[in-house]
Amino acid sequence: MKKRIVMLASLLICAFMGVIAGLFVAKKVINKNDATSENKGVSFERCEYVSDMYDGIIECEYISASFDELIEDSDVIVKGQIIDVDRSNLLYDEYRIRISNTIKGSCKEELRIRNYHYSFVGNDENVKTTSLVTDYKKDCEYIFLVQYISNVYEQYYTILGNVFIDVAAPQNSTFFDKRLEIENPELYIEKSEGVKKEGKGITLSIPYLDGEKISEQDLIDFSDAVLEIDISDIATKVKTSEIYWCKVIDVIDGNADLNNKRIMIAFFPGDVKSGDRCKVYVKQTVEGSVLYTLSSKNSVVSL
Image (cartoon, rainbow, N blue to C red; front, side, top):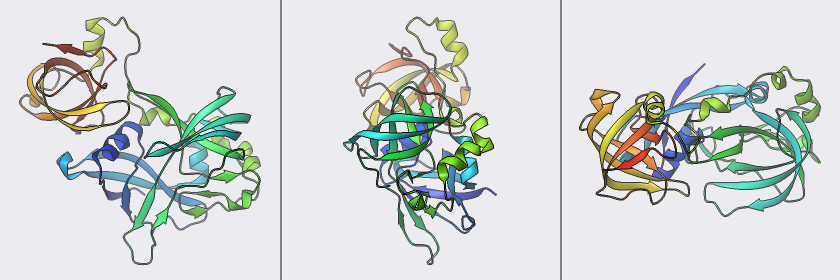
């Protein structure tokens, strides 16, 4: 059963990454009463902005998810050895994996996989804070349940459900904040019906038009809105984008209610600056959200 939660994001960057990737890299206040049965954990499904983004408050829904559901939701499941670890990013570690067995989906012989950092804080005095930065080590072999996330700014694989399965010590396997009570996880996954089902990374991705030569009509047809905007102040920046507050001057195509509204748009680094006026072709990240992404890599026209 779905439950409502509120996540307090101390950094706006966390909020943006949460919407773009479906991943929440911030402190979460949750009720874990529904996640106490065997092999049950907490799986985030969607999020939406519920207040001014300066407050950094996001409302999310979560479901209690079984390990079987995580297998089903994965786009790719592989066994592989970590041959390189990059811990330079504040929000996640990235592992370069040499694949020895592909259990679900298809992939290259090597993958780069992100492991986002989570901390859960229970809103019940009996639920302790749980840190979920799992202890992956170079040269060791693990089983990875991952989803493929894509948007106009980046495409990547990320570990689903904070699953941690050490091939050398399967008895220490976990997902989210719970012990995985399965004697042989690799065999269990191989025999699961979930490996036959399509993963759900696409539901966390934001569609975009790919290619350098896209007609204006194709952009209009694909976009949720075509807007003339004034670029206001920058809200935050990440490695792949810069997020600005913008005032809508004219709705060329799309929802007329956006006229004179302030919205947030993620641009490629260096594409715009405060004070610029431009026409943009954009997609809304989540229905009702103030955050929009570009419809393609060529979606900004200076005016």
